[in-house]
Image (cartoon, rainbow, N blue to C red; front, side, top):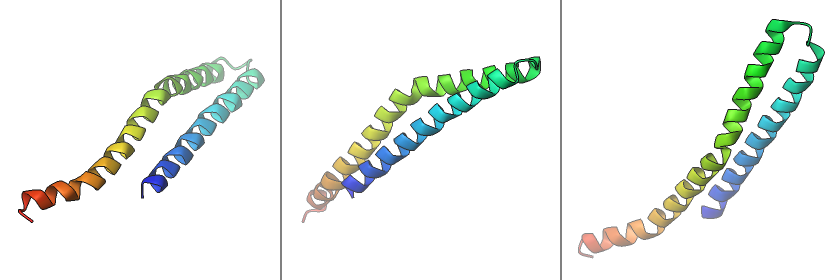
Length: 89
């Protein structure tokens, strides 16, 4: 179970990174093509800024997700042991 959780977490983080990176590249390409439209460039600039904000939080999201998986593993291993002792078995 632990390896599957870590594998799923790694795949999710890679996919999120690719989506954020490709989204930024695509928006930057649109920005150069619609440079004559002020409203479109403003919207694209805000979108790129929002993607930059999400990417700034990406390391923290990764740490929290990894910590959740590790806590799940630890509690899964030691949880049943402590329950048996408390029950008097």
